[in-house]
Length: 364
Image 1 (cartoon, helix red, strand yellow):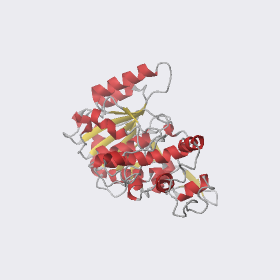
Image 2 (spheres, rainbow, N blue to C red):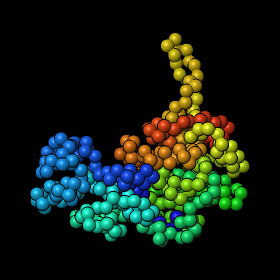
Image 3 (spheres, helix red, strand yellow):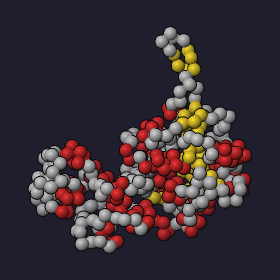
Image 4 (cartoon, rainbow, N blue to C red):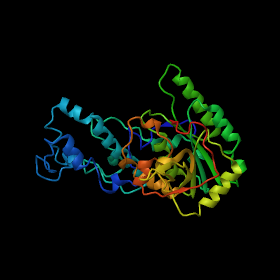
């Protein structure tokens, strides 16, 4: 992961549904409901106004061309450069790029005679150039590209300025020497520094740190989130891991306890394991009674464990869950809406990883 500041396919810029590859499996472009809502005059009833066939973006752009020649150049440019449409088209492009690299079946892009790799990567004139994340694999050091095959993985959310915290983790509980050989790996996830006069210097320092330790993933797009980065990275590069430990860079962790918990929980039924805040509830008689039902909102957002299968399920439904506008301030991995959408089960555990003061703060 060294010396790479890369856009994630799940980011607002590239939004590829990488795990499920639904865009490839269903030849899916923007949905009919989406097109009907934005362009009702072009998609009045789900059919093409020009030829009457089913209206998909592929049909309108390439097969029938009713959105092409009939548009004046200014309207065509405005259509292609609308932010909503860019997100959707870039998602298709990046999913195709990924499928080519992984040698997966790929729907060919128009014109239909383009069936080789060049044709799959073909893009209509005027579209913004996507920045394919996977193309940068060729530039990563071999040790970082090689998938991690151990059972235990730690993903740590951090900030660019928290150099001392990362150093303390590397010297402490994150040191692989404290675990059986090849069984544990630690990766820091962080967003690139904000655009300021000193941004280039700060980014250079981060990249140098990444070169030295080979344990950092740096997101260069401000609109993306560390949650999206982790949901994308882990299934791709650590798919053999049985259980994942997520933590903030200020969580209190003991290496011996961490290994014991990961070994134990990897065989326990459930999806997410963590400390759950005990919040009192009041019944109709106004008597304060303990609320024994677990709530995702009460999961302490400083450290918890996830089964890898649970992480993959969250990644596969990530695009289906609404996200806040400022998604670079995402907290943790198991967001309440995302966890519910993935149908995950929460298991409360005690006696591990007390959250430091201010456990609701965000890490970007």
